Length: 525
Ligand code: C2E
Ligand code: CA
Ligand code: CA
Image (tube, rainbow, N blue to C red; front, side):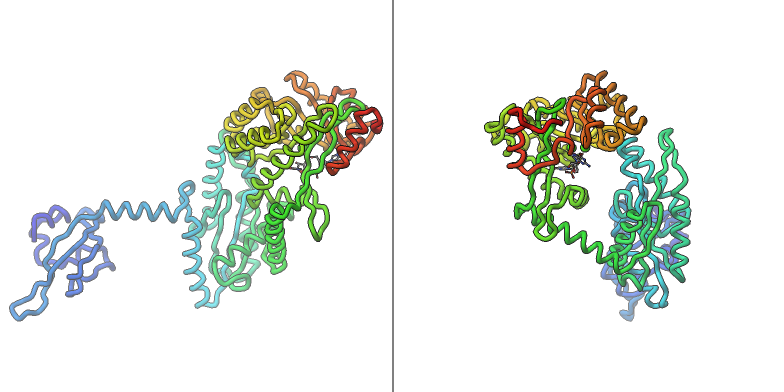
């Protein structure tokens, strides 16, 4: 017995002599030391006199008595406590979500596999709940990522107040609960109600009162799936259904939901193909000044679906945003719109400009987007001033500084910006002032009843006053009648578009209309 053993374990020599190594291992973990097996070497945990765990890597040779019988080990130990605790930390990092400390998806899957095994043996049921916050993105965008993080931590705490050990965080604002020991779907429903109840109470973040709300999808073992992957997928489908039903509720999985999820997947696949097969097209809606001269056009994407006919953006743009196809769709739109604009710049009278809708994820590409735009302008011999990009207030709230810089660089190309759907988001005046934008486009919702509803008229009046204070132009969309147009013009709205003048048109139709309109024979608006 060396002195080293004394210092390591913290016992005096006299206390160590005559005792078995196993006595210094945590109860229930003792191993090896009484047989020749220990001579293969082992790494094991010991407990010091003070109760601290230490890890030792032991290599040993057998001790034999005079008759050549095994009577113990003689060996050396190297302290590997530091390495072991690093491994534990890494294990924690790879199995835990750093923000909330909850298990991550990998660990959830592992635990689920064990729980399923147990349930299978005991012929018991299990419920898997998939939960997603209803207003997480809003909080993130309006109050910033720190507030978003704080919300997720607070949510995790409340979730654990309902069920201590079984939650995992599987993605941004997605949580999964594996609830064993449930005896019926009713019990799962009661649990979901309790969870929604604790999340319905407001959170205080940074002095703001925020109600996050949540939706839940439930899949039951064994009915809805026999392993974690299948249960999670089906709970997710049920969750989507709950969201569609109006948020703040829960849904159980049904096989019909799978069919719907399959349908979405199919459309996603089709959309990928549509880009490649050239099934997308741009239509152009004339933008009018005053009572009749066409001064520009907005590009609006359409999908000429081989079986379902002409699909409108609302049928596939949101889907493209969700499944990550928006980048490819945006690239296509930009290329197509600029090459069309380049051709028209040479052939159409009256120097019209062309507006293109840009989604938040596209602008968030920053330099890559600016480079693509610059290249496309050059390739088509277009002056930047012929192009206007329409962005929604959404891009002005999250990543505001990055987006501002991107917009500033785009401005250097001569390209202008307008804010689309103005009045529906939450732009603050402070942001508006910092932005390199030229125009506010009043949302269609306020135009619809402008001639009949005083509240809508007041909103438009306010937006027009705001624009004039900030030195911005005002445009309106969705103008369908003469009374609407009269009100808008009286309120100082300079540009407008809408069915009252023309719906979006295929390129040849737009060409024809522009030639007619600008040679003085256009429809009087
Ligand atoms: P938006 O930018 O607000 O486009 C105006 C929408 O109003 C268009 O719908 C247009 O057809 C419609 N509209 C125009 N005049 C009238 C009218 O008088 N009455 C009524 N009821 N509607 C009118 P559309 O083409 O279905 O586009 C819907 C939305 O899809 C667009 O809203 C835009 O946010 C998005 N979108 C369209 N094309 C693209 C695109 O190329 N890229 C991106 N990122 N989004 C696009
Ligand atoms: Ca638009
Ligand atoms: Ca709009």
